Amino acid sequence: MNQLTPPLPDTYRHQGQRRALARELRQRGIHDERVLAAMAAVPRHLFFDPAFENHAYQEKAFPIGEGQTISQPYTVAYQSQLLKIQPSHRILEIGTGSGYQCAVLLQLTDDVYSMEYNPVLFARSRQHLAALGATRAELHCGDGSLGWPAAAPYDGILVTAGSPGLPPALLRQLRIGGRLVIPVGDASTQRMVRVTREGPDAFVREEFDTFRFVPLRGAGGWDNQ
Ligand code: SAH
Image (cartoon, rainbow, N blue to C red; front, side, top):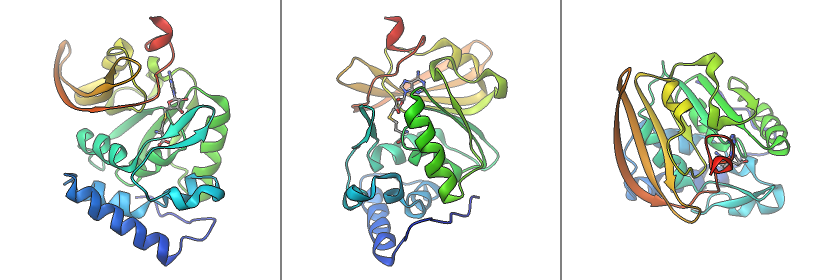
């Protein structure tokens, strides 16, 4: 997996805060050991403006500019766990944002694609990930609600923005046995949904807890409502 080489100090204090975060996540019900190890490994403070570094290991979402937020650690761990990622899996993330979730995915498999709609965040997340040495993900700027057909099929697709429904393009790009994890609902709250593709036209839908995400834009998201 990715060996991370932080450009800025990753001190014993930061590492201790991350171990405490992983313990807290375990208490809240995250039980996938690989996900917990990934959360303990990725220096979340390096995805923040240094002025706000103190907020990095608190259990909360935080502004990353352009009206968007980095998801709270519990949400990142929760979505990652639902995907059941194996080291051989190919994963597509929609909504790169800060790049933090992408760095967590790179701890779970080397085969990660991530798409971001906003060009400012796209450029910044690329810098953050490159500075950490997390260069293996293939990043694209564009409408992720249409997926990235060139690298399909995927074993897992993770949407980190709230969607009015299930984008058909994302369902089509799942491998048989693959899983789509996506928050579905209205603008204020969404249920976490996992759809497993069991056959060419067979999809099984499960619903989990309620969350609050920024809206998924684009043709398969709110721009089409
Ligand atoms: N995963 C991110 C948090 C994402 S916030 C992290 O770890 O920091 C949701 C992101 O989805 C925002 O950056 C927003 O610009 C992006 N987004 C919204 N609609 C999109 C679309 N159709 N395609 C790609 N990205 C989209």
